[in-house]
Length: 165
Image 1: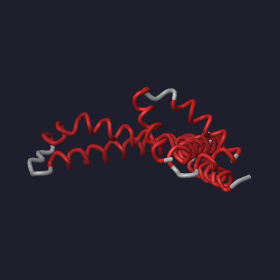
Image 2: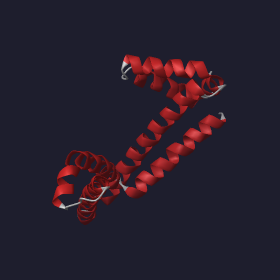
Image 3: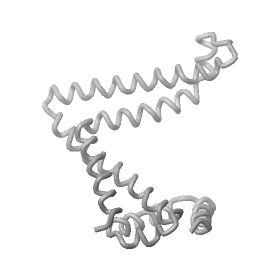
């Protein structure tokens, strides 16, 4: 095992433990809160600006922030209510184990990104990645993910990585 393997194990363990601690519902609620807050704020900040009569210089920015925070908090509160219900019906442990799984998946995605960028951009990264069993696995997975990215973007990224190496 190489240092990269130990880093991958540490990332997966930390994300899994945090996922278990927070539970699936909490993790999904926080992710959904971030996304929904941004989408709703981006879509409706002008209406909120008019409704709140934000006519000052940075009123649009304040309206965006107020909208984002309001939606974020609403979604998080909804998640807390769902967690409360799960505890009441004795599904808290199930929620936590699913959270562990989701946390490990999030950690694996982070490892995939780190390994692929290390391979592309870090001088000597190719040697580091190919000597590591985990590195080779995440490199193959990264190559598969890259097929999902539009060709022009993928080619620019790969070209940029090769110019650095």
